[in-house]
Image 1 (cartoon, rainbow, N blue to C red):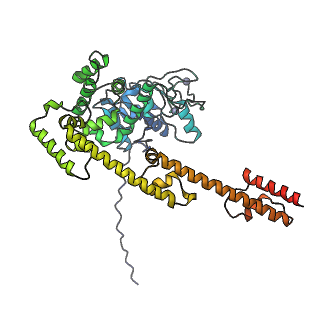
Image 2: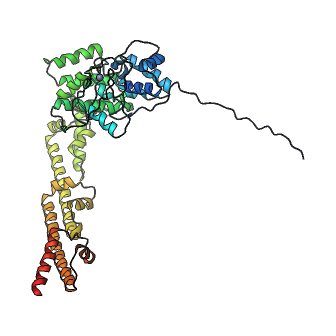
Image 3: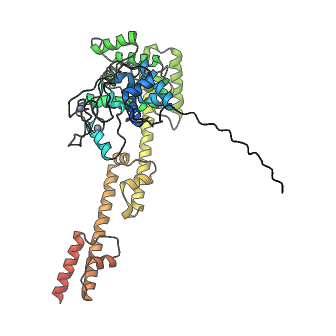
Amino acid sequence: MDFTWIEEPKPELKSPKRSLLFRLEPIGIGTIYVESLCSYLCRLAEEHGLTLPLLYRTLFDQGRPVTFSQFNACSNKTERYVELLEKATYHTNLRFMTFLPWKHLVSSYKLGSVRKWCPYCLQEWANTGQTIYEPLLWFVAALQTCPVHHTNLVNSCPNCSYTQTDFMNSTSYRVGHCAKCGAWLGQETMNLEKELSDPYAAWTEETICSMITALTETWITELKPETFMRFFTYVRSKLSTESSLYRTISTRMCVARRIELDTLIQMTYETRLPFIQSIRIFEMNRRELPIKGIRPPRNHLDSHTLERYKEALSIVLKNPNPPSVVELARELNTSCNVLKAHFPKEYNELSRMRAQKKANTLAQIRKRALSLIVELRPEELSVKRVAQELGNYSWSSFKRHYPDLVELIKQRRQEYEQEFQLKMYKEVYDISIYLLERGMYPSQVRLQNLISSQVNVRQHLYRKAVEKAIKDFRERN
Ligand SMILES: [Zn+2]
Ligand SMILES: [Zn+2]
């Protein structure tokens, strides 16, 4: 026997690159309740058994205390911290735990300065065994209320009244706990109000929440400064030139080119323009703005454009199935008012045709609905069912268009139910008599076994039937 040793090829050992720190998962990225970078750093320190200042010095190579804003907002410092922290953890999405995606629009100044929290949220998370952390929105200075509980956010410790303004102030800062005395900051929920009564506070909540949810969306980082400028110009045109807000916006537009968050909220509130939706519209329509007031006034229309509108109108009027005035205006990149002002006759004719078409459609649907009400078995008849059978018809719009049919359905349904109950009453009565005649008491179990339909014999009506049967039976015998 000849043994030869075969040298097995040694697999090339390549250990993966290690991150400096444990790769702790950030919480809630892309949601309203995304974790703040401060909170993430605290949890990292805890995870490694380090004090916060020690971890900070290790990572960032400097010992000075920093503010919450520098970490959670959108300054160059924030950018630097995110970069270093991403390097240390091998995460690539830590900027979404700060306001960095909004850095071209929002000024870091006054974005946040004091640590605040909702004691009820903290307690609820603790009670349900969730990880305790401090979301980004609690650090936004402009936000004073919890979007879940609609109560004021708290900034002083219930135990020692300490208000924390510096992030690195203490060695004992733990998420959900006071940095000075270490007390737990959660509190059991009391009777809380459901809605915010102050409309400005509600608007603030909504605006900030929508901005935070949008942090991970790519279109934000692609927004051009011109878009903001056009948005500001538009908002300013809606304000009185005397107002202080007008002056603030003007200054920001020419000097800083970035705006404080509370000014942004104030200007969208004054003009009732929801920020995210509006800025999206301004972004998507680079040349032509669909919002009223921005369009060039109609005396600017040249004869060529007017000719084009006229031709388009004459074409659609020949169409047996014409588009609506709004659709046509959009198609032509103009407004209904422009069409109405220049071509009142054609405009009215088109509106009339559309109204006629709508009436025809409604009449057709009514006809089908009526036949459905007759065809459907009464036990399956309901407004919802009829709307469903009509296809893509919402229950509420059916109710709005055909209140009389809704009444009819209700009536049929009621008749059917009365009839059914009467029938069942008789049946329960008959079964009871049948049982009594055989020397058995009409108990619920016996009745339930013998009855032909799935009804609950414990109902008042059926108990009455049993009582009546017993009475009649006794009288007879
Ligand atoms: Zn809360
Ligand atoms: Zn305390």
